[in-house]
Amino acid sequence: MLLLKVVAALLGLMGADAMLLEGIYCGKKNCYDVLEVTRDSTKSELAKSYRKLARKYHPDMHRGKEEKAVAEEQFKALANAYEILKDDESRIDYDYMLDNPDEYYAHYYRYYRRRVTPKVDVRIVIVAAISIISIVQYYSAWQRYDSAITYFSTVPKYRNRAQDIAKQEGLLPDNSKRGPKRQKTSKDQMEAIIKKVIEDKMDIKGAYAKPKLSDVVWVQLIIFPYTAAIYLYWHASWFWRHTVLKQPYSDEEKLYIIRKHFKMGQHQFDSQEEERKQELLDRKLWVKENFNEWFEEQEEITKKQLAENNRHKQYRRYMKTKGVGRMTFDDS
Image (cartoon, rainbow, N blue to C red; front, side, top):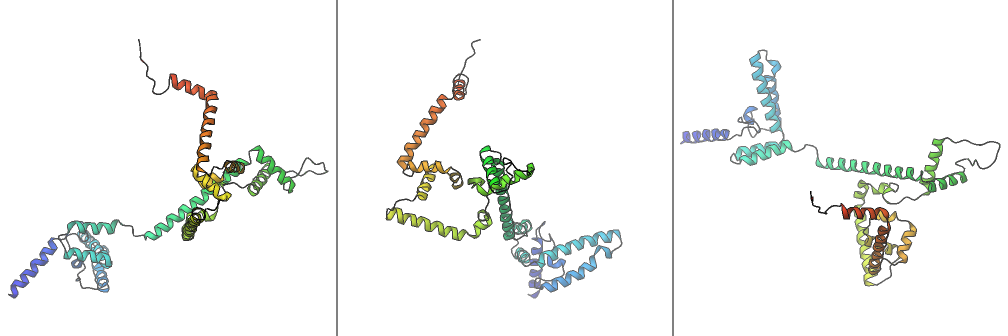
């Protein structure tokens, strides 16, 4: 009876070793056998056995060419086995494979998932990505703002006005006045002063507005709870005041409704001239019927302008005679 139990145990061990998968973990070898330990061995026992065997099979400890080659292979197997068993999660996966040898695909999946998955914490990757996006966003916004200032400094209307302001504030010499001494300003200094005056005095709105730290992605994420609370409060207040209490709209609220009718973004609408906004208010375009009537009028005006435009006439004549969709036949 005892002999049968011993034989059954040996067959079980042989079957388990036979089910070890090639290409993952220690291949057809048992990692515990490679390190000469058992499944109950602790981490310290694993490390102790690994150091002892590593000294024994280190290639530098062998001089013969064949012995060195054998020792090198054994040393690599030791290092691989220790790398697998010293990590708790990897050891759990390996023990699961030993206990469930029939789940081939699951074992391959667990092994390669651990090998392929980045070892860097995902949270660090997310933080780094958001930081890079925020830096690029802020830098790009400053580039757009600088290009806008440079453009306005070349427009005669704004350039002349900036020069007058600079002379009034004493930033530039007023050469029109007669005096014993005339100050000279270099071209670069003059350009810098004009740009500074435009930057200080002109309120650029829209996509080319002066960058704010509050617009950066990082800041937006930090203040998101506050922004969400303000958003909910604003809509609830709007519903209560204008739907329930039927209160009239303020000018700011009228412009908000008009902007929604135009389907324009906040930056795009803010870039409109104040005279233009006042014209929209005078036409009462926050009322949908008035907006539709105004929109039809603008379409008619645009059609008339195109009809009177010579280039558009030429384009229509070309499309009529030679344009896309015209079928011709070769009579030759």
